[in-house]
Length: 422
Ligand code: AMP
Ligand code: GLY
Image (cartoon, rainbow, N blue to C red; front, side):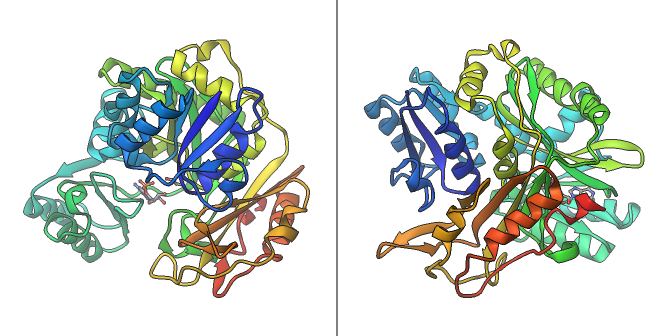
């Protein structure tokens, strides 16, 4: 079968890497892909959100399965268009993907179906929102309603900060349309865990847990990023907790979405906070997480093509997932200045040496070829991922590979996974 993966990041590299292991995968294409993905797939120069051109390509090539990585094409209705054209595509419809596309909708569904989450209120009027902040002092969290590329959340430790966020989201143009509505919610304290699950609209098959590292610097300092590293499993996510999350979060979300006429097929990502009062949902995403996927898919033993086809054909109840016992750790190497401005086009050295290490895969996030060389082409450039019997060993292995790789002004966090050892 010919397979097309849509996207160009570390998550998509991990998806391509896993799909390529399936006997069902003959040829893999990736649009637009990156320099690392090009080792495993034919990269096609179509942007991930150019849905019409992607559809033309898939029809012309006779693609048997399309897999969507990022949220933008989902929100643009790629799944609806491919499905209407009779093509198999893995991901939720536009309506179902709104669970990520509108934080206010996600909150309404959680409230209606008794899914535990932070208390909240949604606003379009700035003055009303500011008055709410006077009545509900900081710490408090302000979120732009729509997609904001992971930058629409302000965890405000002071009321002044919260007001500034409301001002910029509801009157400035910080997030364009995405800021036309804000959700203000209760500040939650605890440990964060990401749980991704396959859903065919009815059956939920949860994956192993993972923990992201959102802040740019060690000890969770500095601004939020797209994710500086991940490990799997999260030791605090016990089997009992996993069972509880299926019963109280994942299954009710999928059932609720179905009842709302938003049949959810694809990966449902639950960002959870383990608070003293129990598990609460921070957010849902309509796709695999990045960089959680790099760590999680390293541990998946099952055939990913089979699972994805079962999601599309609504036969997930006939399947189980199997995992290797090893832990996995992904360390993101980034360009100096990220998540602010940074240089691109820096030649990367050490990739061949790192490729020789066992149980280690260097997933590319922002790279391209320039004059036959792999060069940096983004803020997050590589996700160096390793598997080992324990998290400690996986950390050491991942950093051993990191230490072989460099480019001008690159950096990474040095404490990925350290939380799991405490
Ligand atoms: P989100 O995009 O909703 O996952 O938010 C990004 C990050 O902001 C999360 O990973 C949390 O670290 C933090 N966050 C979001 N909502 C809350 C909340 N209610 N309380 C505390 N931190 C939060
Ligand atoms: N790792 C967070 C996300 O993918 O949204």
